[in-house]
Image: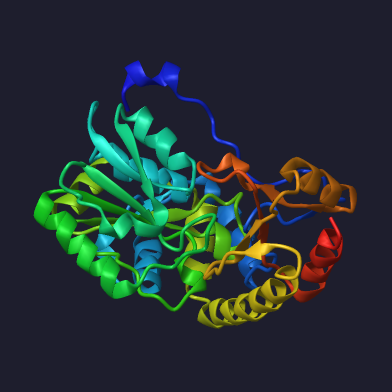
Length: 336
């Protein structure tokens, strides 16, 4: 991290509400958790009177099986954002150019600037068409947040090869990839993959994730990671959750089904962006975005003001939850 950059960096707005009486569609988190996760947590809490072994073998193995890579490629982190920070921390020096997609997750810019890097915004829709050579790192969010765009696996792998030839690291944020059938790039040479357990398993407060990389990148990440970077509950519950293949498939199917149903209904009133993620981006047209957000909240539902994403000025984002909850959202948005 570059100390000289700290005074120029601000915090980034996010979704999520603390009011339990409000149905929260502003954060893209699975409302369901794997059965048995709380039992694992209780056992892990009891074991937290001692240091966790720093090798995290079970967690690395579960993460490797989950992403389809080798266990040695997995570096545990306390959530996906720390995975992104670690990845940028071993690849970006002060003054380096980093290609950042827009609109996309706002934390990329903040993390690049914390390293002293210079973010260069590129269109998220066409990021795979850019020349990677001028940049030390190119960031890709797959599927992209907030648009929901899933990049073609073949095109993404081809772009990774172009980055490698240019001596540029490709950082792929796969926080929502497990809601799709698309393969991970974890372990691919020249690529750093950031993964999060927050979204699929509905455990944002657990703070569990990892980076996956091979070769010299893997060595640098392993050296830079903090010792005991995961708590015992995060390591044990995370490893357990990543083994719940039936839960993951059931979640994928529910999200696919409900996302299609919601898009069909919402298309009568909004321009709905096609999505492969557990959320939908809506263009509200000539309506005032703040009025849409406030009116929906008055009806008991929180949605995300997407104008906080660079390049969006008439958009809101809504999560995809269970059918009954989605019905409440659709009713709250009716006639806004």
